Image (cartoon, rainbow, N blue to C red; front, side):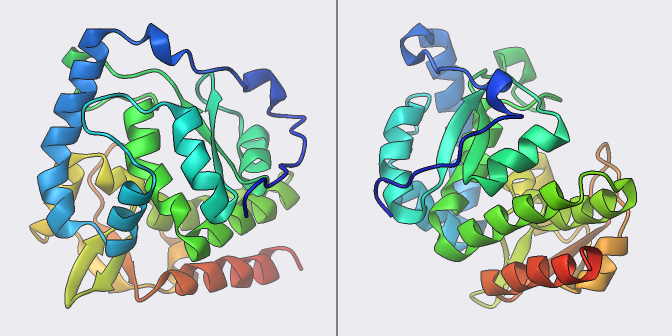
Length: 251
């Protein structure tokens, strides 16, 4: 997939920026180093093998904030995905346009030392450490692009978008998978948050078998620990779920 040509972005174009990697301070690299060193022992034990494989393949470093150009030099030949710098939160139409083009909106801001436990706004730690390693996995990569295409096609229907948002929440953000005889983490909200991950590992939420109909109907609150999570058996399962959701919602 080397040299993948990405479709031109129109809606998202005003939000695209350049990452000035040289502008990060020693203190910011120190915060990154501390954030990663806190997470990796738990992730080595509890993250799914596909996540850990992606982390290694992308050459992510524990001692320095990622240089997105270097990450993309490794990522694009694997799956055609690109971690594309953006200015912050995107409106839904811009977000879905980017996913459909295999461009993941990636913030370049890093949380401060005072906000290491939690930041309400996206930052490069959540976006890169939490999300991007999974984009190196071909099936997950195809799923995420297909998800973006489906959502872009139903932009005018608030109810359908809300239901698709639940699919994203219970897979991309808070997804778990049955692996090696236990529950492993792959959702970015679990990968990047020690508190959320520990809550799952210690048996806090009810873990149900993944069921598309239940997921599309499962309400959630962003501000609370998750009461219910849905475990998949494979990433092919969520790719098929995205195609089934498209058939249901885009008839």
